[in-house]
Length: 168
Image 1: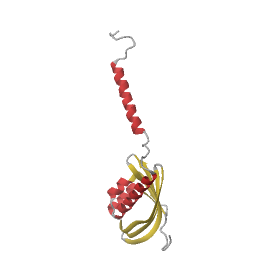
Image 2: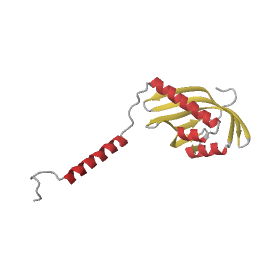
Image 3: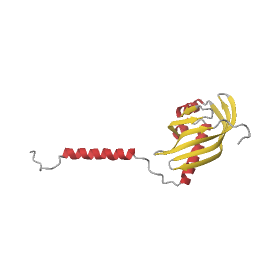
């Protein structure tokens, strides 16, 4: 025997148990779902509405940095013609300034929140130039946001076809 009492736990074993417990605690905290928001549904609606308005303003200004902060990394936009765009596509377009906007505003905006998911349905007016050609149309879109540990992120957009004049 090495001088320890029978049944005594070696210090190296205690250190390993403490290390495993610390790792398990850290992984448990990091792997846990984000805590439920303390904000009321009305506060969430206001926050998402403001964020979506901020996003539209960033698009109008070709502000790729702000767009990048709002868009989720796995973001997808689907247009009324079935074309899809990723976060990278939109950021690259903003940097290239392929569209120059005179108007990129929501004329109507409705926000609904279900827990950690929010949908913005809005009527958007787009006017300016796209690759040097004039554009001027209105459309409906739905933007889906999810609450993350870093705040609300824009994860999916669905846009209608441009509407015929005077249709709304």
